Structure formats: structure tokens, C-alpha cells
Length: 209
Picture 1: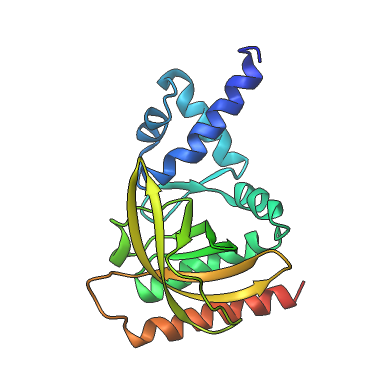
Picture 2 (picture 1 turned 90 degrees about the vertical axis):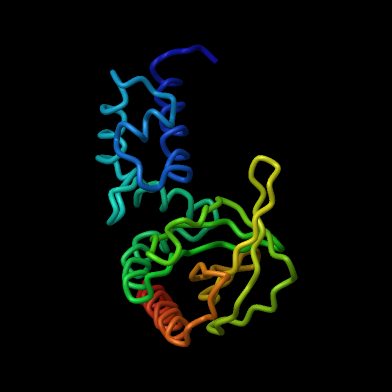
């Protein structure tokens, strides 16, 4: 493919949308530096992606995929209506628990991380796009359970504990709302209640469609 303005724009989008996963609290300059984009065009690209809803900032100033990007990703699973309802519920869940809250889509033994909101207890946790389960989970809609997740990055396997609750399912996928856990601490009881409440909110929002 020719190196023209279109292909450069696509490359910039792909690089910028991936960079937040490695630099969750990047400045604008840090973001496009991590993406390998020249400063002369970096600010323009970041501003355009924010304006189009493809990037957004979290409460700490870090860049994350925006609502348009989330909606596009969820549409790939046939779950596009989740995008607008998920983000405010995740922010509320993170604020009430101080743990990283997330929505994820499960297919077989694989979990694809969706939007997330970082809390104080898990700011240093490396969040991956994709995880697999250590054991086959036995999910029941609305039931809270603790699971062990495994991700591999640059040949290094990492394990993460999470508290999750399934909120909806299709013939192929299960949608979870969850909290990343600190493996060195026991699970506080209030986390389960807060997570169950967030799950009820998402289910209720979906029922209104």
C-alpha cells in the first residue's frame, strides 16, 4: 500500500489507540512519542482523535479509547449498545471501590478486556488486551465469582486475580463486569456488593433499549 496521507492517518490511529495500554497516564507528548509519531503532527493527531471520540482522558489525565472506539469494538461482538452505558457505571464502580473496574467479553477460554477505569488499589497493574482463564469458569448470570486470569506479554506470563459478574450473554459471548484484585490482600466484602450493584445497573440500562 502506498505511503500516503490516508495510510499515515490509519497508522497513527492504530499506534495512538494502542499506546494507552502501555502508558495509562501519558501526557499528550508522551502519548505520541510512545506511538512513534513526530511532534510536528502528534498534537494534531491526538486532538483530532479526541474530537472524534476515538481517544479520551481518564481522571488521572491518561489516554484511553474513547466512546466511538468502544462502540466500534463492541459492534464487532454484536454488543454496540454497551458502549454508552458502560463508561459512567465503571467510573462510579471505581470511585466506590478504588479498584480498577472493567467490562470484558468472554469467548470460550479467552477474555477480551473492554473499557476500564483505573482505581488506586490497582494503578500499577499492567492491563492487557487479552487474557485466558487458568481454569474453565462456571459462570451464572448475576452471580459474583473470583477468577484467575493469565496474560502473556513479550514471552512473560502474568497472572491477575479478578472479581467478576456476568451481565449478559449471546450464543457466542458472555459479557462480564469486574474488578481487578490485589493478590496480597483478602477480598473486602463491600467489593462484591458494589460489583453486583454495577451489574444490576448495566442490565437495567440494557432492558430500557
